[in-house]
Structure formats: structure tokens, C-alpha cells
Amino acid sequence: MSQEATAFDDKHYDRTKVVQIVHSVIAKMEGLSGESLRTLTKELQDLVTAIERTKAELASARTADLGNKDVPTATDELDAVVDATKGATDSIMSACEAMEKMVMGRGDAIEQGIIGEVTKIYEACTFQDITGQRIRKVVSVLRQVEGKVGHLLETLGHTVEENQLAVQVEDNRTEEQKLMNGPQLPANAISQDEIDKLLASF
Amino acid sequence: MAVDKSMQVLVVDDYSTMRRIIRNLLNQLGFANVDEANDGQQALGMVGTKKYGLIISDWNMEPMSGLDLLKGIRGGTNDNKAVPFIMVTAESKTENVILAKQAGVNNYIVKPFNAETLKSKIAAVIGDF
Image (tube, rainbow over all chains, first blue to last red; front, side, top):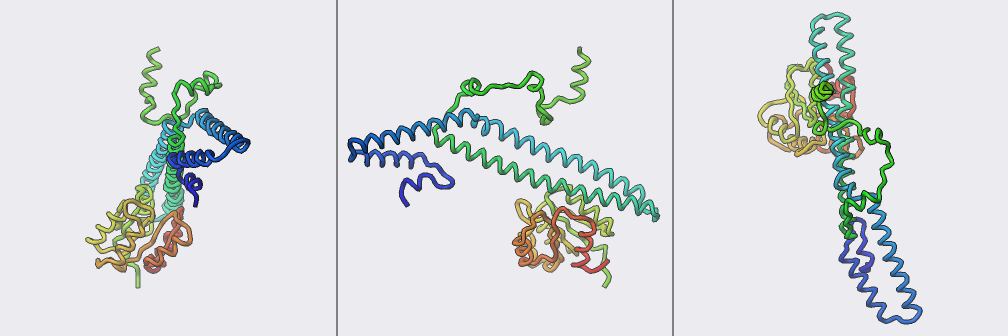
């Protein structure tokens, strides 16, 4: 396989190899002249333009945010979903266990009926395990995306200043929409007590 | 021969909620002596010190999976070498089932499951009860 082909394999974009390819192309250019040289120079300039455009598009897509903020936030949110559903499931299970104890030993139709319904709830509670596993798969994929984006940026030598991005990305949301951030992670949320105190302070 | 419902059952799963569900369903079926382990490694340690009549285990666990637990039990020298072993897992590909069977699993339940399935699979490996 040629050196050019190995620089871009399925998983890696090796910058060193790209540089080697460029040097190889320059060496080949030394033997050219006239129209052939102009054509090749023009093609290389087009290539440079395409690379610069790609870097600019990556910048405008806020890829730095993706790796530094968006993906970690998304994974934290998903972990919070798993924790919340586990908490809810445990509460449901506790209620079921209490109901079982209340009717245990009656030996009548009511006991049979309650136990039957409680069993259905236990069966339904298995969703927590399944959804937990599915969400962890999603988290794993997100972390892979995060790693690949980071590697891509590193390869392109891409550094984006935060203030540059702030200029490029317009926030068209209304003031109310900006306040709509959905459920907060426990560490970022304030408690009902704190809300009550806050309201009482007005 | 009648099934001895006082037998010791070991439930292995890294999700505490799932262990709790299986334990409660086992209790409803009359199996009151249920131990729990949260991964294969812990379970293997327990298997080395106590005789079990049935093991119900998840597959996907860290650091030791249910499959490695099964292999450890079947390949070991403990009293539980031939214990009935049911894999309860979300891994539902054919190759998973084949691999588990080759390792010596007695039955295989795919999550999510219902009480009737659990009962029938237990009966299939230890006899009707």
C-alpha cells in the first residue's frame, strides 16, 4: 500500500504522515514545469482551501463545546436518568413488598389477587435494568464520538477561542426560552426548601 | 423426586433492583433462602464456601461476567460444580446462547422476563414444584 493511502486509515488521521505526503508531492513537483506545474499548484491550493473550509466549519459547529461541555453534560444527564429510574423503581418495589406482607397468610381470593397484581408490577420493574443498559450503551457511544472529535481537532491543529465562537454562533432564543433548561442535575439544582425560602424573602 | 424449596439459591446481578425482583419472585414461588452477589467474582467466592441448589445469574457484569462465573464453577473443584445454573440476561443473540450452553448453562432467560417464564425455567432445571 502507498504512503498516501496509509495516512488516512479507518481510525487514524496521522498528521505526520500527511506532512510526509506533502513533502513527497513537492519532491515530485520539482521535476515539473510549465502548464503541468501550474495545474498541480492550482490543485494543491484548492486542497488547502478545502482543508481551511473544513476547519472553519468545525469551528462554527462548536466542536470544542461538543467535547468539553456538551458530551459530558449529556452523559451526566443520562446517568441522572438511570439513578432517578432506579430510585423510583426501588420505591415501587418497597410499596409492593409492604402490600405483600399485608395480605400474606390470608389464604383467600384477596391475597391471591393482590399477589398476582404485585407480581405484574415486579415484572414491569425489570424495565429499569433494560433501560439502564441501553442508556449506558448510548453513553459509551457518546464518549467514542467525543474521543474521535477530539482526535480530529488535534490532527487539524484546530484551536478555537471561546470569544470567536461566541461571535460566530447567534442565540436566537427568547429570554423565556433561555430559561427553559429542563430538569437540573442534583448538584446544579436548588431544593424545594431553598425555593420556599427564596419566595418567602420577597 | 419432590423439589426441596428450602434449598439455597444464589442470585447474581450487578443491578440491585434486578436482584430484588428475582428474590421477590423466588419468595413468591416458595424459595425463601436466597443469597445475592453483585458480580461473578463475589459469587465465585460464595460458591466456594456454601452449597447451592440453584444459581440464577446475569451475564454482563464487571469485573467477572456471568459466563466466567459459570466456567469457574464448572471447571472448579467446589461442591457446586454441577449446580443448576440459569443465565438471565439481555444478551439475546444466538451466539450468546450457544456460548453459554457450551460453558454448561442449564437454561437461559432473556430480559425482560415474566414470573411464569422464571418459574417454568426453574422447573425445567430442578423439576416441577
